[in-house]
Image 1 (tube, rainbow, N blue to C red):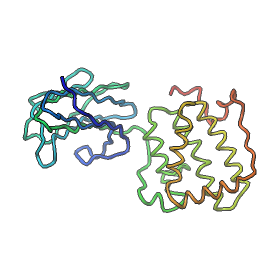
Image 2: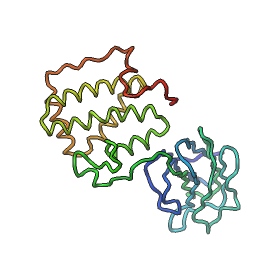
Image 3: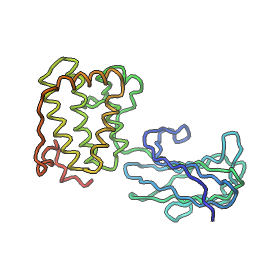
Length: 272
């Protein structure tokens, strides 16, 4: 059985303009037949952190071309949609689904003329309580927007929550890293050298905590978070000002055996 190319993207921050407009994309893929021969593909996804999951399928292009007349879609071995659900007049299909908490496999068996395709999405409502997307207003100042007044910029709180919903340890460690990164910029603009030094000590401890939790990916995670925090020219310049103020400072690391104590929370009592 021939397999056509599949583009699979794991997304967590996009809203869908459909009847499920309040839901977010957990996984999506375009599955197409290049030659017209049957195609069997799998879309794997995790549903932890979501509820009210929906399978959304767009059949072919918006102008009615490249539609599929026959397909079978199954979730974890149980058929959700069959050949009777597809024809050239069906543009979109949606079904509520009840996946496992762990990894799920959505299987798509496609039977189509050459070029026909299905755009398959798994949607869900996030269970984490996150602030709304601040949009452009979140980037107008260094301080940003914090509508729930918990000390974290809303854009960063959403980025951490949506991208690391399956690991409370990682969310808490990245939040600990966020605070000194944000404070660097604020204290540099206040020309408070002592505060910037304290921020560097805090960043050192936060880095040790993150390495304790995830040594293999800690550097990459910190780099990704930093790029999100310093996402405007004003924030970047303020951060560079703090870097210049740190010249000549010494910031020793704690012993490796005590890196768990560098966390502002107890990472050893959390399950994930």
